[in-house]
Image (cartoon, rainbow, N blue to C red; front, side, top):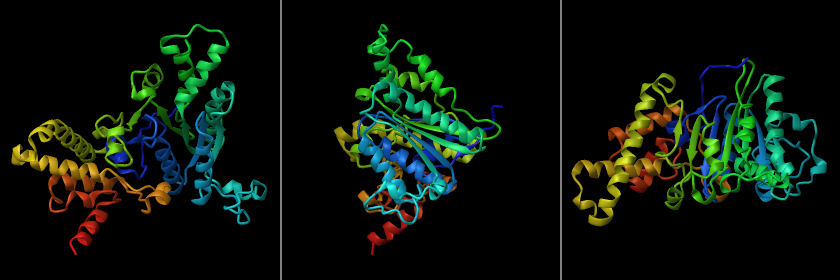
Length: 368
């Protein structure tokens, strides 16, 4: 009873909702090297989906750091996504005092097979998480979000098991059954008439090489790809999503509407033009550009800054309250930037904003 209905999943993250909208019941990949913010985006998505959609999430921690699992659990308890009861002391974190009845109100289930586990355990934990998600979908008719962090470690564990079984390795030392194992996992992630599983998979890219067999095998299964860029992270723009490399199958006028599609493509073409002009700017300076090109550069920088966003889960580090931005507000704001409605506002006012009203407020405060 598979469902063929196409529906957009609102995440509240501007760059995702605008450029690579997520398909409800689809498969989404978060590609990035070490330290560019994959896990933080996963945490923010769990938080936003739980609060905005009252959705259930299943988190499978596959071969990642034990510290990250611990941090994630504490973060979810602090924000109320996981409920341990009134008597639970968050500072002492004594698991013995957990109220089992209060646990039923929690919005997320965790399954961990971290770095210190044997390869057999790490290769099974993604499938365990998927089985839990299937239970909620098929038995309870729920819409479930399945987070896998990190799908590369699933492949890596399979490679270790393959070596232990004495199989001949294939390209770059991976197991010969790489495509089969990946297909067996990915093809179970789907929507039915009763419920759906939407999967968000963090994908570590070894040495930032997207042609490596592990990320390349995953590519073919995905409906949307969110590529995290080290160059954007170096500019201090978080989430460090590359709007030119990231794509979605449902960024289509028939699904998201003509205005959303036109604004998304307008944003991409403005950023691409700015990228093309960067060599000229570096050698000759801004003065050598035509007036039209200067305007493109000015708007592109505002777009780049406005694609940053404060996250709820990063509040402790940034000191800025997190923001959930509705899709229609995102589209309207970027349309305004492209049309020149905010040409009078300096680019710095757009940095780390939620909606456009935050940028206007920053501009007014700066000019007092």
